[in-house]
Image 1 (cartoon, rainbow, N blue to C red):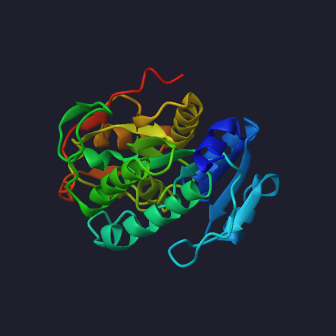
Image 2 (image 1 turned 60 degrees about the horizontal axis):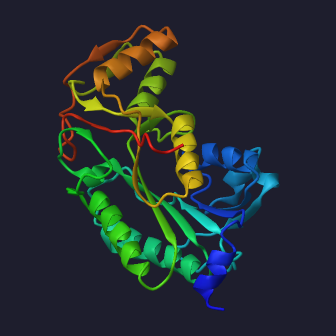
Length: 287
């Protein structure tokens, strides 16, 4: 029996490997996976960080930096992978994404596919759409305009070619914007929360007229689970499907926090690596 035939015969396998398990999304996704009775194998670089989560004792944890070492693990035939890991953010313009992240991430995924993984869900980015304006469907042609986006789009294409050699389902989930517990301290709402906590009277920001698509990270995790369970292949948007201005987003957080802080609009220039107005179109067929 060939490896591809073994994959088909084990399509009901419940083993699920999650890379980047302790990251912003991973820490919220893993409890959902455990609640669905998946046999989770969590992979991350920092085991000490992992031990702080309630789910640590409910799964198998592998401490690994796959940029440095090979994974010493044999997945069950027909296992699935949710690949969240990606280093070097939010420095979107760094060549590190093309020169280091792209080959290392491809090699890691390829190793698991060769070993028997039959379903691969990878988180991409809305930046793959480049400077396209307005509502964007997952069927839109990628037009990456920075190294991070280009590396992600190239990884998707590499994995597409890998499917000619190995039989596996590829689910490509393009993330839009998100917020919540564990977010990068450099993100705008995290910076605002810090300013409020510090008692600052002024919060410096851009003009705030950009239109973006934001979700709480818990909803992002749920959408990823929904995509996984759908068993549908292809590209998907992980988004709210609604546009909100950055200014309104910030003002709503200030109101929610009951804070009094002046917005110094226009202090920073608008980012030059993303369009002024874009948001996702939902994957309404995913149930």
